[in-house]
Image (cartoon, rainbow, N blue to C red):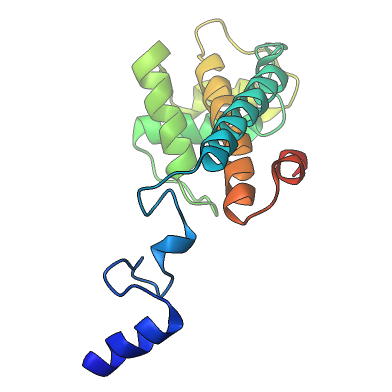
Length: 172
C-alpha cells in the first residue's frame, strides 16, 4: 500500500483526492471544489444552448400536433396497442412495451383513454380514417412529442461530455 501511494506521488497524483477511476480530480476543477470562472461561463453557455435547442425541438414537434384528426403513420398500430393494454388483452408486439405503457399511463392520467373491445377499433384499420370524438389521440401524440423534444438537449449534453466544443455539439 505504501508503494502505491509513493508511486502515485511520483506521478503527481494526490492519493487523497481521486475520482475513483484513476483520474485525479485536480484535472476537473469543478469536481475538486474549485470551479474556475471559465468553467462557470462554459456552464452558462451550455445551459443557454440547451434551452435554445429545447425551444426549437418543442416548436417543431408541437406545431400542428393535433392536426389532422385522423389515423396517421404508426397510430395505426400504437392506438390499437394502447387499447389492448387498457383492456388487459394479450397480443404480440416485437417491440418492448415501455414507450406504449408510458403513453397509456399519461393518456389515462391526463385525459382518459377508453378501453374498447377490438371490434370498436375498426377505424384504426386504415391510415386516414377520422378519429372518433371520444377517442383520446391527443395525449399519446403529446407524450411522444415531449419525449422526442427532451432527447435534443440530452444529445447536446452528451456531446459536451464527450468534450466536443459548444458550436460542434450544437450542430450535432
